[in-house]
Length: 95
Image (cartoon, rainbow, N blue to C red):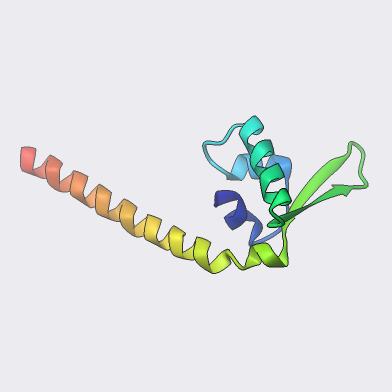
């Protein structure tokens, strides 16, 4: 989902995705990109540069996930606030 979310905003090169998607190894990113391409959610474009660079962009079909990824991201932020708030309450009650 993180990869899809990143590509919803702009096409990105592999190295940009590797920096942007936290907690993913290069090997796992490569595997995920291949799976997303097979499932027609992203397109892979080899750029005519030296050295050769590859850029990924979301397909029209992949864009249909944007609302879903935004909803999941919003839920994640709310959940994180809830968990942090609960942790603070526990810490305060121990003092």
